[in-house]
Each structure stands twice: as C-alpha cells, then as structure tokens.
Length: 460
Image (cartoon, rainbow, N blue to C red; front, top):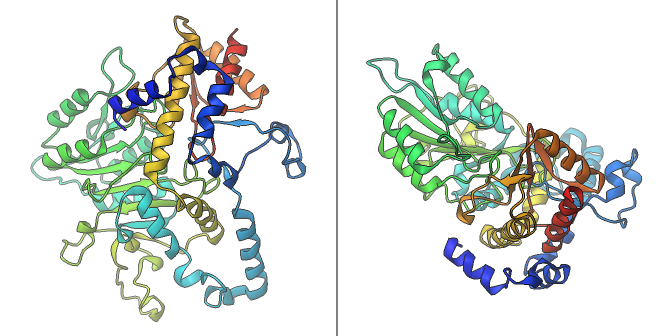
C-alpha cells in the first residue's frame, strides 16, 4: 500500500470524521479485520500477571494488558507449551537416542530443517539461502568473517558504512571486525548522520555518503528498519545503488523480519541477519536467522572464507568423522554447531502461526493499525507540545511502530510510569523516546484506541 492508497483507505474508513475517535468506531474496524482471529493464537499477559510475584499462578481470564511491545519481545504462541511438554517427554523417554530415534524430528539430522522454508517466506528468499542458527550478533560476526575482506593494497576497499544511530551491538561488531583486520575504526567506519535538524536519514543524505566513499568502501551495512526512529529504509533501491558502486550490501533485519515485506533474493542482497524474538515471537533470546544469496554459495561461485563448524558440514557425510571439510549446500554451510532444540521449538511454534497467513496480509493490517494510531495521536494532541512523532509519516517508510519523542526526559519518564501503572506495555529508549508498536498478529484497533485514551488521561 503506497501513500496514495493509504490516504484512500483513511478516507474510506471515514477516519477524519468526528466518529473516528470513538470506541464504537474502533470496534467496527475490528469487526471488519480478516486477521482478528490470530489474537487467540497468542498468550496476552493480564494486568495482574504483570505485577504478580508468582505469575505462574495468575488467572488467565483476568483483564488483559495492552501489549504494544512486539518490537522488543513478541508474545508467546499458545501452541508452544504443548510442544515443549512433548519434547521434554521425548528427552525423558529416549535420552541420547532422541538424536536419531524421535517421534517427530530427530535432533541430530533435521531439527532445524522444517524452519528454513517458512523462514524463507518471511524474508523473501530461497530456502537454500536461509539458515536458522545462533543469535543476531553472533551471526553478524559469522557473516562479516566471510564477507569483510578488506583489500589493504593500493588504497583498496577497507571501509564499512553504517548508520550513526544503529543499534549499539552493530557498532561494536563493526568496530571489532575492523580492529580484527588491524585497521582503525576511526578511519574505516563511516557513520551516516541525519541532516542537521532532521530525525531520520534521507535518501539524498545516504546517497551522498555512498558516493563520497564509493571507491574505498567494502560493505554497506544498514538496518532494514531503524530501531530508534522506526524509519524503514528502501532496501531494494539502496542495495542496487550501492552494489553499482562496487560494494557488498548486508542488512540487519532485527526490526524488519516479521514486520515488513522483504524480497532479499530478488533485491540481490548479499547477506543479512535477524533475530526472531521480536515480531517473530520465538521467545526471549530465541534462535536467530541469516541469509546468504545463493550466488555466493553456488558451486560456480569463487570460494569465500568463512568460520566453520561440524554442523555446517554436509549432512550426507557429517558422521564419517574424517575431518575432511565439505560444506553443506547454501546458507546451511554457515551453521557452526548444533542448535538448541528448545529454542528451535519456540520459533517453530511461531512459524506455525505465521504460515496461516502471509506477510502481505500482515503488512496491510499493520499499515491500518499504525495509521489509526497516528491519526488518533494527531487528533487528540494536535497543537500540543508534549511530544512529537519522529517516525516517518509516509507509511511506506515505517513498520508497526511509532516513536514518540518527548520535550523533556522527565515528562517521558512520567508518561512511561503512568502507562506501566495502568497495564500498558510499551518500551522506552532513553533519554526521551517511548516506542509504541501495534503488532498485527494480536493487536486490535480497540487496543490502539485504549492506548490513546490512557495517554490522554496521563497528560490531561
């Protein structure tokens, strides 16, 4: 849905009418939502369980909280607990033999195999281009160990371009990779800043930095969706532009996977990494994913260095134990070691739910939910100065999140505390930002309406 289509949607829903700010109107929108049944697929905390010292004894039928924090940690799929119980029973009953003799998925040979195809649909890739493994920052390091090979001769390509306000872990990873090659991050790490007075990075700004460093940059590494401002970058066109300048292009999709429509293979992205515990709901610290375009792993591709481990060895000969490395085809050859089975179950449960819809359908609802949130905030707080929405107003340049930047950090803290006391779960990014993320899998238009009403109560 582009900006023009989005405006048509708003007009069609009569959001600009006086009735749009009512609870009845929110419920009418929910009644027409074709994805509303997915809410029952997730366990939503109750207001009481959020504060209960023994939450395992909490009453699940109590009043639910307003959970608008899928950008930080997704909710637990309702189907997960039976899956965990079954796996623990298998472990208890089979012991080590569960690696090969398992009623569902043998741990050794194929525990992660059922995940690559549904995960590839989430990110727009071939199944062979996706691996489920490790955690986000570990995977970033594994990928850069392979793709960052700075040419130290004749002023070759040694630089990495990154956003100035990328997530700290990305900065730490890039700096350490540069130092690993004996180089100086002060010289080799190029940080793209927003223009003076602006909150987000414009295409003109990014293009200028790419052009200025076109001959010396090895890798452009950006976030698909910026964690602080909520800005979604144009992955397709940025990738094409930077690659035309001779750069490799990789993406941190921590906030984009399960949130935005992605086509990594078609967009010719070289590599990417993402976590799965946010919009993909795999659980705290859940197993992550990575993408390597098949042109880099095909038999005809030039050999590329990588860190290797037993589970990246071709499964057909892995148990020969002859210490003769033979890479598994595709991105699977980047896997280092056996995955955590319990962590895999968290992701499998979530992907079971995601497989019942599509990212296109989720994105359509997300555009509506976030647009409705934006409208209500504008409607009720227009002309006031307590906060501003720093997330782009163009729906195509954002995901399921609005970042509210407050005039004073003390005001942000007051509002955040007030939301917490009323059972509204969002998150803060100090010193002055509250991030609000209505996730299309479980959030409703009524949730959005109630959030804004609580904000009105707190701010008066």
